[in-house]
Image (cartoon, rainbow, N blue to C red; front, side, top):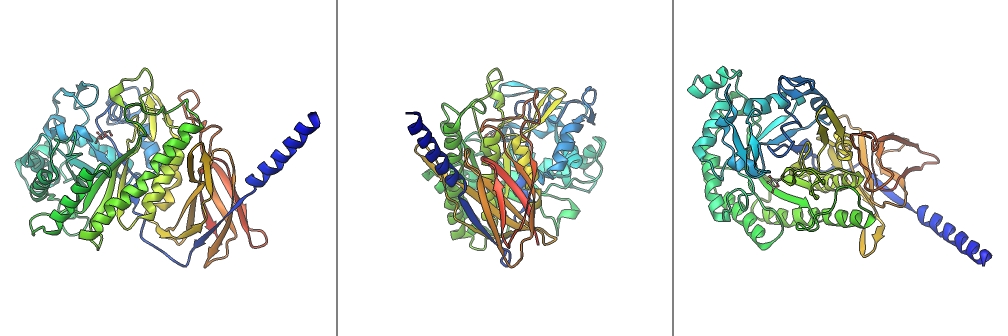
Length: 523
Ligand code: AHR
């Protein structure tokens, strides 16, 4: 009996080793190039929601937490390292109930935040604080104006206040509030989810509003008249259902027949990774089944983008209008004990893999997807950073964004590989994913995601147009699919160095299960 069991074990071992030893040939065609991977696809989103702004960014000037003009220094330093290109603000659903005047000046209005827990909104973080924060982290402004409960005039006055260099009353008020020079506002979001929390408008009604806001909300900053013009981003679809197909059709058709007096440069797309909105997955304390389910769901981003990009192509074959995925990421059940209105969740190795898969989907469509904003930056949904009073934790998703920094504004380079498969139960997914790009110095970068949580993968790397000598970079993996960085163990999931040298003309990279790896390819 023992002999039989032993024999069976040996067979299993041989089989397992054979399976583990399977190589995936990956060829980077360095002689070819595609579109620029716009750094804006690594954008962030900060809404007045839960502890995203208050505590996450703003602690106030009198706080014991080290801060610069009320903005916490630890968070600023962490964000500087991932080179955040833009931060969408102040919402979200919050934006369509936001009245900017309540958030300027010495005396701030105390209001409510009815969307998110019905808590007090002290308005101590407003226009000037947001723009100071952007200056501190070196990022650009993406302001969403209130279409739902505001007026074009209110939004127009906000932009006069922000951008004119003429001595108008609003400019004088701005100067009295501490800023004499006009601000640069790079992106204007015209409403948010106007088909839902932003006012439940029909596509036609929204198109009417879009035309008005696009016409009247002007950017007067002299430095933004010829170059660096502000880009208008219209509300786009939130899914693939017929009502969203109609939405994209209506806005794009309206744009196609526009006159001189209005324009837009971007159409937004919102898509969260949620399997069941009524019974959301947990963000920690889950197993392989939930890992596979969530990753299967997240890959639907690909089809969704292609569906709406095809409609955009009909009206805009030159791809003048960017598809702006300005809300994406995993939306899980709130952590037990937290305010459900605060959307506070943990962030695991599963989220690192999820982030990489989405970034790669955007990068492969870089001609159309030129901006994206993960939801949300701090303490909300798939966050980069979690804070608890003076403590701060960087999440696995943060490290993915950090590893991808070389891809910002790099030129897409095609990669060929047979992905293989990873199967769990009735779910089968591509086993690996990869993208490559050349940075402005001509250096070649390669990202490879090993989706399989059980098997390492051997990448047999070849490059057309260059002799590969070595690959050097970082890899992020973790003991379990739900491994997280906690306040007690903040460094449980952090990137480790990885390198390989070519031998006999071949370069083999061994990648851990459930890992995200970024290497530079050296010749
Ligand atoms: O990110 C949280 C919310 O999700 C945003 O406020 C809203 O736009 C979306 O429905």
